[in-house]
Image (cartoon, rainbow, N blue to C red; front, side, top):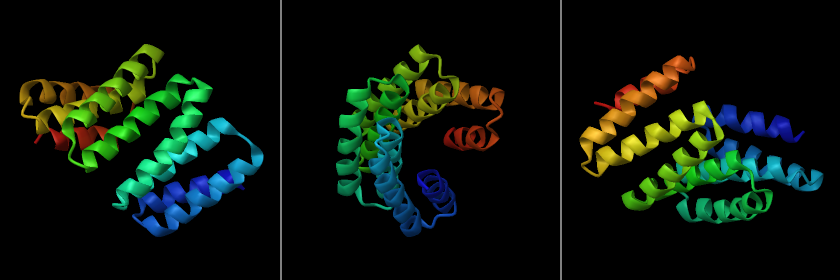
Length: 169
């Protein structure tokens, strides 16, 4: 049941139905709490928090990320640590705190690269590039965006490669 709600939430989020997506994320959290699966619960908290950030509910998103952080630290999982850094970067970016966003995204890139997570590293590289462009570090930002685009294409992720290309404009 938790997997159904998580999948449903992701699909609804992609179709920009934020309120229903958040409902399904919350239902997935409830089920995962019942099951006691801390790894999936941490992932779901990160998705729920991202949903709140995307809906403009930044304080609620931050609260949910704090719940995720406690689990991530207890689990000591590199992938979850990178995801947490990424989500915290998105929150900082939404608050226009570009230096904090850069720090979070760079931590995500470092974690993903060290763990050999190529797809996660490409996403993180794109995020670092986007922030550097916004910080008027245009040359290094564009270089990172170009590299991220190439990596995403090599991983057959055309949608995100196209997004990285748009970031370069």
